[in-house]
Figure 1 (spheres, rainbow, N blue to C red):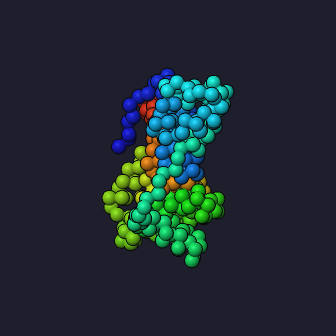
Figure 2 (cartoon, rainbow, N blue to C red):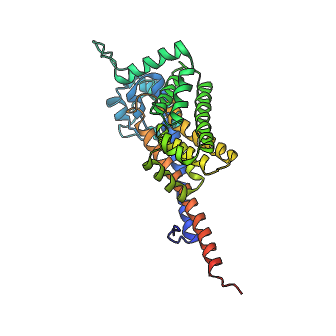
Figure 3 (tube, rainbow, N blue to C red):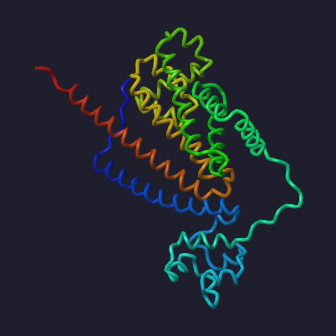
Length: 335
């Protein structure tokens, strides 16, 4: 059955694409600015400082953020306090300073939280972090490479959470960021390639019999086939990144269907790079405190949605144009 898409006029397509592009630029700017505020707060170790914004008023600086008025006057180099409703962005304009630089200086005035009298028991996340650090100290990157490799093969291991945790550890300086990220990417692509080669060399009967060890269940097979029928090669990209839990099934089907090795490797590298950014990258950018990073995550998630919507709309429009041309050719009667 041929998939018939609702017609999209070129004018509507261009307008929607321009709108989504403008939204992406706006959200990318907001994501970058909120990340700068987050990064300073993480460095200072003050969770509340991550909520300081350009629209924060002077009254909030002294009351909500507990900044001492004397320290605020010294920073602003003023003789008297500005009006309580004055915003940080207004202060930046008056002082002819960059908003982000002024916010960073104000964050340094936010007092550190009081240490608890009793040490709280470690959370499950902290226990997991300690265990991974212990493994890394004893065995090095081989633990990380092995887990990610097995995850790419479809085995139920916490490859994503582990990649996110190593991102946090890299930000804290406990691991080397670039070598760790490259090791994760290498392990994931190597696992994809192995399962692809298995699909190339194994007949369909054996795939059904032994594929369950790689997540090759009937339900997953039908799900991936539906994706292949609808999106074609884009399925390999999506199953390496957004729906990575069925990546092994997609690799098996790609191999058994005769997908070219070069195309598969390109899609695998692109998809796993996106997966690496989602897990390792967000772990590095956000850290373990998601409450502190709530604003950044809000803008960044909307940015990803807008980007995905643009890609899907372009794909749908291209497919619609191909279907229209095919329908025109079919309607031409042979002479």
